Image 1 (tube, rainbow, N blue to C red):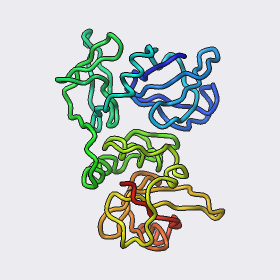
Image 2: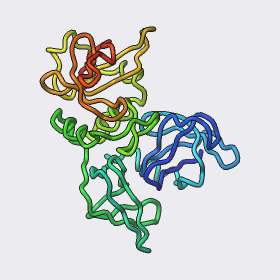
Image 3: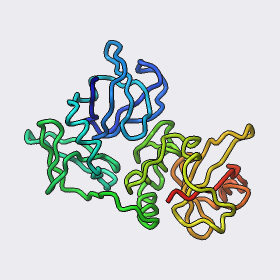
Image 4: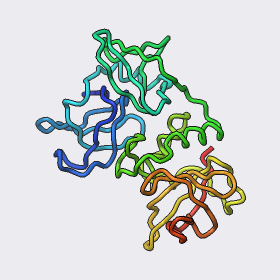
Length: 256
């Protein structure tokens, strides 16, 4: 079995082994994975965190051994929680890191990938699962542009947004909205929800296609065009700029 780790800020995870193939997600700095198949320069991988699969370019990652992989599996991750900062190597090379980057083996502003040492003196966060921290993290992505498959403040989709916000705060959500909708406890009414709970929305065929994070006073923060604030009612999301509902509410869920 071959194992690897991402050593760049974010790389595309594609549906096919081609640079022109659709990006279905991203692999962020410090995320580790198992290699399931190889094809020329391409690796078909399974992410350790959520089991998501896709193709990546082998030039954008670094191989790790099984012992290191298992160590990462059994270690609580430490995240960078600054919108953007840099890690530096001993050779003074700078690696840009956006919010959500994982810092393996972090201790006293140092972390390592294999034998390469990095210095990072930005703000960090270990798992601190509270509803307040969920909201604080969500607002850091405000106005990030929508990007299908994206997981960073420079481009993010609706389920990538909810997954990253929850992940940084110590909770595992699956990658897609339809998968996330199978997690947690269903609530009957908006009035039963708390800020930090999730709202799911479906299309005309009844398929879950959208998700957002509920805020106080019947607001929601979600990625649609950009990460934005809109009103939430029993019908769905009401966009005041467009003066209409844009998403039809399917269910509300409490994740913890």
